[in-house]
Amino acid sequence: MIVSHKYKFIFFKTAKTAGTSIEIALSKFCGEDDLITPIIEEDEVLRNKLGYRGPQNYDLSSASDDNNFLKEQQPIKFYNHISAREVKNWLSEEIWNQYFKFCFERNPWDRVISCYHYYISYLPPDEEIPSLSDFINSDIIGGLRKWGFDIYTINGEVVVNKVCLYENLQEDMENIRLKLDIPEKITLPQAKRQHRKNRNHYSETLNQQDQEVIAKLFETEIKLFGYKY
Image (cartoon, rainbow, N blue to C red):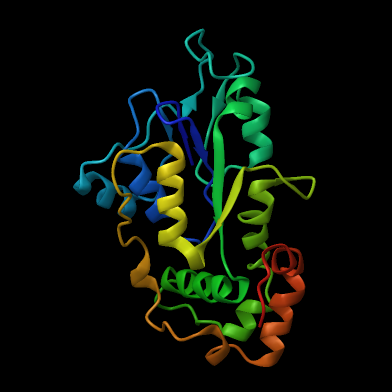
């Protein structure tokens, strides 16, 4: 996640919504006082090669009078997929109320497939790869709610100013740029795309039962953003 005092925004990073690419792209425009949380090593290598700012000002383990953007002077460590609930509890009310808060959401059927390919890419070579159906019926995809809807809501209520859609990625990023008065186009790097080789439409990959399981789990998001299958 990013808290930019320079452009007065808070970016909440949801999972499997191009969040890492967006975060890297936004870090190009961050100032030295802005808060940027760490990402995994391979993506930090990419960010470093691009010459953008890396992790900074996220570990406030020692309370300091210099941390005037916090609600209270207390030891705090911000992290990648942090929730709005935690950030609201920690940041000063002035920053929470005045900064533009946004995140991205994604068609849940496509999001689950993306999560599956990411998951199996990190399995040990000797471990059996689960089928997509087995993955969908496991407890693992419950984490997508934790790192999705639960990030940008508090008690089920959306608390960010804008939930952008992955399907409108380029258009929404340009609208965000104009809103924040960022001086040049936000160019997204290709982070994590190597994990998924098959880019077919989810309807060609998921059987009817799998689609229904996903529809039930992400019923709220589907209604909220008008997704259909």
